[in-house]
Amino acid sequence: MIKLTVFYDGTCPLCSKEMSALAAKDHQRVIQIVDIYSDAFSAYPQIDANAANTVLHALDDKGQLLLGLDVTHRAWQLAGRGWLYAPLRWPLIKPFADRFYLFFAKNRYRFSFWLTGKSRCDSGTCVK
Image (tube, helix red, strand yellow):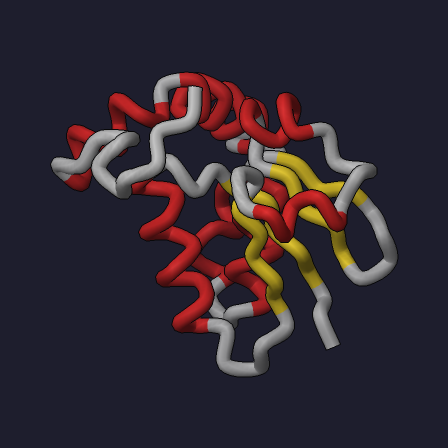
């Protein structure tokens, strides 16, 4: 049974790498990962593509929408690694982590290139 469906930007090399790592650790296969630029995304009309391209989105098994680092924490929690991200949800750290996440998300292609050496279009798919 799928417990979380994560919607991510498949044109972002770092995002794709993170989703691959998450899928590899999801031994119970309870996380579904959907590229917002794939045909599979059309099955989720309730998710706004522009918003999902700005901030990471997910739906839990109750249909509840999660955003940003809440998605990251829940996904890795399901994969047995939530403790790595738990501090980012602690009340004193959460506001700063969320602000940094928004900055990171807005500049993710630049960070991706710096961290992976790959640009957005290296996959052969470059969506504007």
